[in-house]
Image (cartoon, rainbow, N blue to C red; front, side):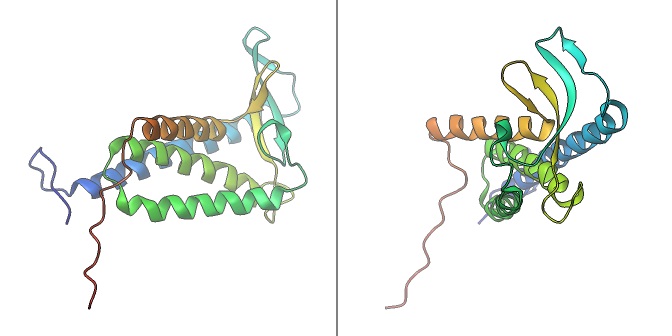
Length: 178
């Protein structure tokens, strides 16, 4: 049973939260994809562009691995993990009863799809494409906006978990035939 929201709109609350997830995922994905297209077109092969002195710069780098360049030879594995994460988030979304969880999962989904798109369609393709990273923080890492969405979504999930916030309504068990 789905409850209606308090505004009197009659829209089921769970369905509205799924729309929040899809909206956040769509925005995260579009911003990531647009930023990657822009930096590849305007910055690839050029000198870094300072954003905050030399502490943060825009510098295009292709990354076949994961964060911090780890696992550069296991690109296919990261492709499978991103696809699996997207499938799990879509399946879990049916149980959403929290806008905070919808936001967190939307960030994760949008980020996962952003990097998955690179792995599927960027050179050399075929699940082995390198992710476009371009935000370099000195002495830390080179990232992209999908990575930031994943990190923020993951941090929000940890926070929600520590605060005891439930992902969804508890399901009532089915009556068993005796």
